[in-house]
Image (spheres, rainbow, N blue to C red):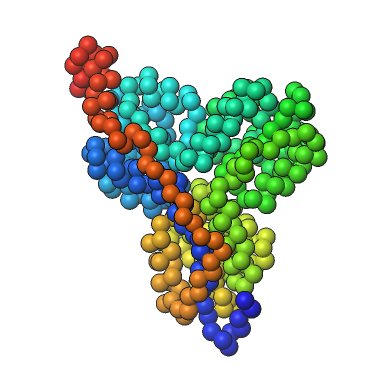
Length: 338
């Protein structure tokens, strides 16, 4: 694919795959199904996924997003986000007599189980990830006494372990593949007996979207990534595009956030979206670009995705009755009017 010149027109290279991954799709549908099945409100602990539009849309349907379990009224239904939560959050929900729906992405759950297993075997676990990210908080909570956070290669020098022969690394699923492996290489230099997890923790969707954006960057002077500012995988895609050779790359939630000045001298725009972004937002950017002469759209496909996840098992139960029973158990048979 050769770079175009101004004389041959303007075009958009549209990445495939892009947008919703299986874990996000499952989590969003879970909120919608819960609202349909049990009625509003459904409380969601933290944003179900990191996307402003998705959160606003679900709020209009009756979802209430909270940051702490204590904000959820007793006897209510609370859903845990796709990023996962620590065991203490499950304990908080039980103490608050809440019925729960766990929408944690199964790939994040896999990392949680690995953390528990290696902790039982008394390994020091080096968790590669970004401090404060919900997924990192949840994974760390599975084995806090065994886990040390490593926030990039620059953190490696200060990492200490009890026994260099019993060390394993795990990672946040939404990181840059290249950055993670750079950190792993630095850790292996320091701890030659470092064990890798049974399979790469970085999820298939993150890897696929980063491979696609690298392909876009080969030919696009400008890469636009649709995604929210708190979306780790979307932020990483901007970084990957720049590292892969794009002259410029920007993250936007909506088409209205695009600065027309970015298009100056640009004949080829690469367009993709983060794993928590619905296609309606990408369509809006395509329309915006078409209005400015970028009507020729070419799809750049680098992978096929066919993975799907079943909905949380809790959606097959009568959670409203469960929640009422939890309150009745405390009040001696009469649900609280609080």
